[in-house]
Image (tube, rainbow, N blue to C red; front, side, top):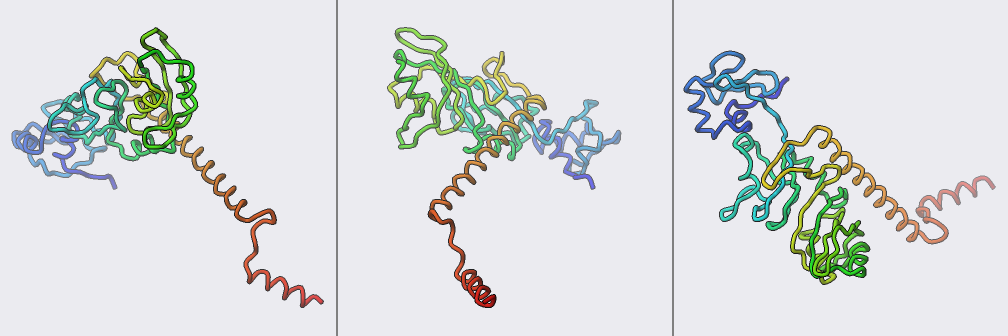
Amino acid sequence: MAKSMRLDKLLGHCGWGTRRQLKELCKGGHVFVNGQCCRDSAAKVDPEGDQISVDGTTVVYEAFYYLMMNKPAGVLSATEDRCSRTVLDLLPQQYQGAGLFPVGRLDKDTTGLLLLTNDGDFANLLTHPSHGVSKLYRVTVRPHATEEQIIALTDGVVLDDGSKTLPAAIHVVTDEPERTVLEMTIREGKNRQIRRMCEAVGLDVIRLRRSALGAVKLGMLQPGQYRELTSQEVAALRTAASRGKATATIAKNTAANAARRTAAGPHGPRAPKGAVAARKKRGGNRG
């Protein structure tokens, strides 16, 4: 049986207005379902099977949206805020009722690639700490980064909370007396991680932009602009996260097995007392 939903909920999801606006829209005879005028905004419809239009414009329903935005500086990676603009404020009306939220976050002053979706499972898959989807950042630091500082960042540094970062891949883009531009690839998502890593080795981040997430690249998307991900890009992100999940599971099981072998000692695990007694009894019966 097809899943049904209220007409006003479907239209709101597709950005046609608030519930009150949609009620008036239906009452005014602007909404048609399968060619018939529908004046009841609470009517049940099938989002996949019914043909719905508003003033002759076909309503295209998509359960999940996957967007990529080039987040500008000064905009929050949040769904709402009383004082500052958020990334959702930059989206047109068609997405406002779809329940979109940022996948992870970028600091207010950090720019670049940010994903937005209403698919919670997809977001959890990408942001889980152990799944290790790569993130590429372009980082401008000052003063000039020394070879020792770059090696330290590559090997992993101890942050201000005592945790140590995983190794990072670093490429020097520009090396000047007063500043250095780096490309840094990490597979973690600690709070303000790039800035804290640089602070740990005595470098000040003056510009930070995320350029890629897994195989998805920012490209020529301008600050404040967005686009929907292709089905191939969504699939590539899912695959990257799933591979990371599988690798993490194997590593966890290997460590657990090693711990059990260590606890068992050189002669292996001891048999339960009942099993030992049973073996002795069987041996006695043979004699």
